[in-house]
Length: 100
Image (cartoon, rainbow, N blue to C red; front, side):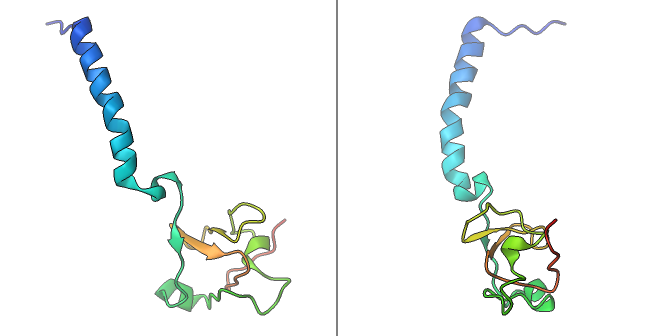
């Protein structure tokens, strides 16, 4: 019981799949490329960790925290503590840990 795909059927399916890729990208929006939504300070987890957008101590801010995975110099970035959310680079929470 061999199933062989003709060259014509393979080409047709390849073209259909290739045409569908851009459409899927549009449906997914920008979040498909790893961009999250900004963390709301009123989010229950953020409140529990006392997250603020602007750190009261310039020595302790998200951009110099070990949990922060955002790009250097960016205004906001991802954080291990708040998956799927972006935190302000100048923000702070109780989970702050000095970056090595």
